[in-house]
Image 1 (cartoon, one colour):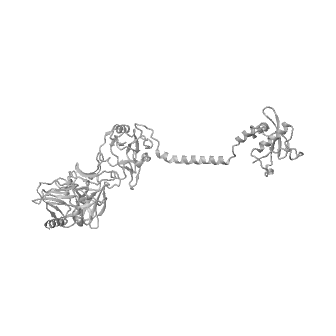
Image 2 (cartoon, one colour):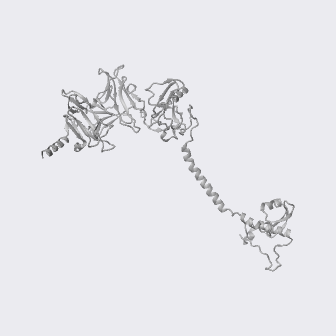
Image 3 (cartoon, one colour):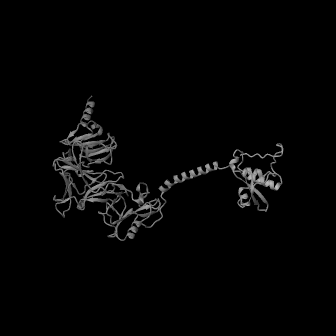
Length: 559
């Protein structure tokens, strides 16, 4: 009974939310606080909570987070890369170390064990802190941001704000370095695409200083040097509410947005960083051209390629065939051109040769006015320049990839593989035309008279049958029926001469409508000519009306 009460007491204690602070010697999983929406610790004003939060993609997987209670906005997360289940434990042990395990393996730790930590606290600012015995901060979430900055959270050199993964498994990060705040894309070689020093919307309070830190204060982002002297400020809202809790969030689209945290959901400011909708590395996806009206278009040279891709996964991989360099356009810009140095000053041919000889080069940009040559080992979206540009752009493609006409020259196979999309489109048409032609030929053959070769062979095999002449033979013998001898029943008689000199008379049927009730064969005209020839050469008529019917030789004509 005592053991049951002890276990029951511990279970109840574990599921009770802590307010403000909690002591070491603590452990529990999401299941222990399921009735409290996974929240373990609340700030004193209850605006922020610390605990387990389900992911939006899978409610059975959890993040260990600091969350704004009114808007349900996550402002910090311990384990974005290693999600846990509802039975995995969070520990705040007696040594002062806070850590999270998944299946018995540690996936996050504050590394604060043995540093004199006496309590964990959640401040009204949303800052999760580990406090020493003297009340000083040993560790704090504000020094380890994820993708969000809160009001009055100092962001300084050595820190990084990192976005969640985008659809291409890339991330974006914000950092302070080289006396500037810079946004970059985590490509194979990280590429910057925005900096506060080049931001024309900022206000300069003191020029020439070295930026050391920045923080959100009221409706502006303020930048200080190491002596806390204000250098720049970036006003992102017209709201002047000094008590508003603002957040700056680096999204997985590469933009920084600003919102007020309030009950019912965050209120978004229209101000974004960068200001240009095409100013991020991949607003449209790799190789697409981004237009200012939020329109994405594949360059014509890659139109026949699947998903507007050149077919090259890595510039060093030549296993799929030879690689060529083709021109993408001469009115395009690229997000990184204003932030990187050229690899050389040369002419266009020299820049193309440099890309060909550099295995890591995927895309090049050449400035005609300055001769600056830029080589890139990763390719994001291109930017359309409405009023024309100074850069000529080329990209590597597989020579057999059907990437269109090679308008840029360069080494490699200039003759591109025949576009497979054309084959796919034309082949069915050719097949259909062939089938229709075959069907028409078959129909015409069925409609045409039957082949008479068998009949001809049979009649010619009978020795006593008269000689058979074709119409063309008779037409030739009579000189196209030019010498008319007279006219008889059913037609005229013409004089003719055979090739061996034999003279003959040929009757040509006329007025055939008069004998439509007679059953005549297809060869009746030629047969009639044969009867006339028989009368001439045989010296007797085939039919004598004075003879009796029994002596008459009948010739049966069948149709």
